[in-house]
Every structure is written in structure tokens, then in C-alpha cells.
Length: 623
Image (tube, rainbow, N blue to C red; front, side):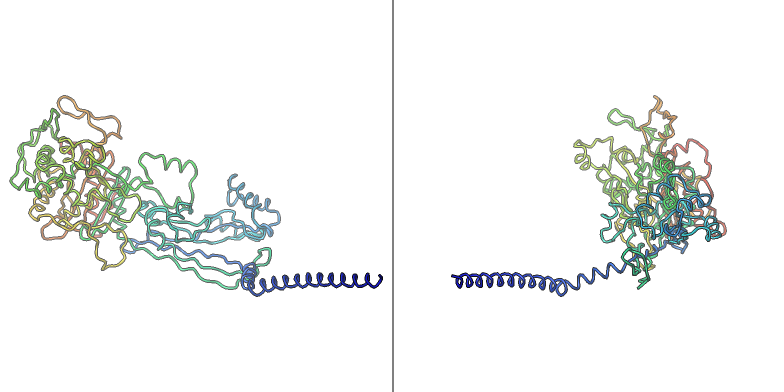
């Protein structure tokens, strides 16, 4: 009995030992496997994690590329920005330190509150930025007393600088803090919070080239993040410099000529489409985006009805007025509807479908041919000519001269303009085209719209024989071939007749721009006036003028020089003065200033400060 119980005890003990031993063996197997997994299979990964905990990678920002004009004049540069920082753990009484700095750096209540908010979110051994954009006086006063300001350091960083101020501001653009939209537009760039990015103009269009590549500094840090020593430093690569096609002197002359007015000027080289000047007024100082705006300053800027932030040269879309008449003339000759002997009688108006269409000169021009119709801007001549040629032929010719589509100059927000046709009206409005609309289009009104850049391209094509180039702003290489949008397919004899009329505009006895002859070179041009609101007239046909200045017509002028059969044209211009009244009195004098500047001997150039004063006369009322 006792033997049986002893045997059962031994069997149970052995079973328990086997279970315990199996459990221990299993546990050690699992532990060993886990150790093998962590140390062998995942050892490299955890080694990297440990190393990263020990090494802090700090980016070093790359200086942005600079921007120059065609002659090497600096347009956009970088300059050092002095910033005051305090390391809280070294400052002792942080609040007392800020109070002692207050008389020097003059912090607002809002700035002080922002500093104290950041103080509680940041580790005490890291420098806390107190104020940026310190003046030389502020830096000097702090440095002179630096021993009394424990924990204070002056940091130097590179920021954008626009040494020409408002000059070419719309063309150059400005930079600002990156946002979500910027990250979507530039997915290849890895932005960090607080990074700057081009917001408009060349700064925006060439962000990738100007940005450069940032460097990196490897710092050894302890477990709390305190820097111990620098391990390695990879220097940044500066951004690429840009050389633009614009001439700074001509640009500033354009801005001076536009001073006090709202409008735009575009100057092109008609031989290759290079932009020599692009001015939009009123303007703004891109440096202000670096310094920052007060709420009042920003509100004033964005509420200005003259839109200082908009680039009117490429975004403004205006009825081209009588500057469009050369298009109608070329369309008529291309369709075989007119030759150099064609004349029409102008009594001052015509009546079509019980509606009276007026000429700008109520007494009429009498019997006129194309050359004098262009020189005196006779509306009736072009009404009658448009009836013969039709809207669709006019539309085809307009597109051959670059109207009705973006030039793709390489700047955001470029307007396409509008050249109407029968099919366009059916597709957009679902109704037929009326004959009277053809007459209105013939004098550059109605649905017709063009940007100053398109108008400059149009007159450049007339000047060079009919070739429309894509306007360019960046001068990548001296031997770079210009891109052609439309090859010159204009009959030479047709073009010669139109050019003769454009020269008579300036040099003819009754030319609408005869008061804007250049002092240095023979020029050709065409004045224009485009309605902002529909005119009310008396029974006699006289226009009833509005007292509201913003109802005044826009003034336009297109021109090129030299206008000579033996010389290539070197300069083509389009000028738009918003609510300027008449092209002859407001826009043509601006073009004269620029032509005189461009062709005058260097010692006799004058940028001026405002357009020439031209008195009102019957001639000034031209369309």
C-alpha cells in the first residue's frame, strides 16, 4: 500500500518536473528568440535610432539667388538681418531682462505677450528670438552694454532685399511665409514651418532656381537636447542668379512717366520679344513684406481701388480702342476687300438699323483713305470697312497678331484678353451676332479686350514685318533664339500702307499724336480711347461728360521706333492710362518720354517725373 503511494508520488513529481522544465525551456527559448530578433535582426535599426537620439541635424538655409537687369544692375539682393535672442536659463530674471531691454528695442504689448507664450513652450537652454530686423543703432546700443544683459546674443541671418524699392515691384514680386497652397504648387520642395517662398513675379516663377539647396550641421546632443559639440557641417549651395531682359533705366523712366496715375507700360524689343520695361502703377515696396505690415497699412493696400498689388501690364484687360484699327485694315486687305485707292466719306456718323454710330469728330473728316483714316483716327472709315470685311475675318487677323490668347510670358495671372466672333457669341451667349457689333469691334470696343502686353506684342509685330514673338523676361544666354508664336505672314505692301498711316499719326499735319514727336528718332504710333461706361449724348451728338472721374475713358497709345525703311525697329511700346481721357493727351506723352530716354545720347537722358502737360483741344478728343 505504502509502496503504491510512493510510486504514484514519484510519477507525479517527475511529471511536474517535466512541465516546469518544459515551461522554463520554452520561456528561455522565447527570451532567446526575442533577444536574437532585437540584437541580430533589428540591431541595425535600433542602432540608428540610438544614434539619431544622440545626433541632431540642423539645417543651414541657402542664400536665394540674386536678380539683375540686362546691364548687371542689381534688382534683388540678400542682406544680413540682425535678430535679438535670449537664452532663458542664462538670463536669470527673464522678465526683468526684457524690461531693461525695452528702452532699446521698443517692444509693443502684443510682441511682449507673444514672447512670453513662446517662453513656456520652449526649452530653457535654447535661444528664444525676441526681435528681428534690428537697426544699426539698436545693435550698437545692445553690444555696448552686452555684459549687463546675460543670455543675450545678436544673431545674423540673410533676408531678401529690394534695393530699387518700388521699381519693377510687380515684375520681381516678393516673398512670404510658406503656406499649404505653396506646398501643393511646389511638391518637390520639402518646406519647413516658417520657411519663405516666392509669392509673386519672378520670385514665384523661378522659386526652384532661386531657392538653392540648404546645408546641414550635425550636432551631438545629450538626452535633454542640449548641444555638446559639432560633428560635421555640410555647407549650403546658394540659389541660381537670374539676369533679366529689362533695362533698369528705361523701367524707372516708365515709372516716373506714370507717376500719380493708374496704368501700365510695356516696352519690347520687336526683333526678339525681349521685355525691356514692364511698369504698373500704383505700385508697392516689396521690402514691406519683409518688414511686415500693420493692420492699417495692409487694409489700406488691399482696399485701394487702383489695385496696387495687381500687375496691370499682364492682368489688366482693356478695350484697345482705336489702336485696334490697324488690325481691321490688315484684315480687309488680306481678304481683298480694300486697296490703297479705297476711300470713304465721313459725315461724322452713320446710321445702321435705326442706330446712329458716331465718329469722334462730330463734323466728320470728309473723304478719307486708309493713311489719313489712321492718322486722324476716323471712326466712320473703319465702320464702313468692317461692314465689308466681317467680324470673322477681323478675328482671324487679330489672332495672327497675338491677340485673344495668353503669351505665356512666365508670370502667374496673365490675362488672355478676348477677340469675339460669331461662333464665340453662339457658344457663350447662345444668340446670334448683330451687324452693329461688328462696327463697335472695328473701333476697339464691345466685347474686345487686350492686355497692355498683348498690345505691345501687336505693335511689335507690325514693326518687325508680322512676326509675333513670345515675350521673354529672363536672359538665359546671349545666343538664345527667340520663340515665335506667329510667323510673319503679312503682305509687305499691306504692311507698308499701314505703317505709313502710323507714321502720319505722329508726323502728319493732322496726326492725333503730332505733339508727341520724339526729339531723337522718327516714330510711328496709334492713339486710342476706350470707354469705361456707355456715353450719354445730346441730340447734337455731343458727349455729356460725367463728373465721376472713374467714368472717364481709358487712354491708350502704341508706338515703335525707329520708323524708317532703312532701320530695324528697336523699341515697341504700349501705354494704358486708366481714366486718362484721351490717348493723344495722356498716353502718347508717356511714350514720348520713354522713346526720348531710350534713343537720347546717355548724357542727355532725362527720366522726368511726370508726363508732359498737353492742353485740351478738338484734336485731343480722339478715339
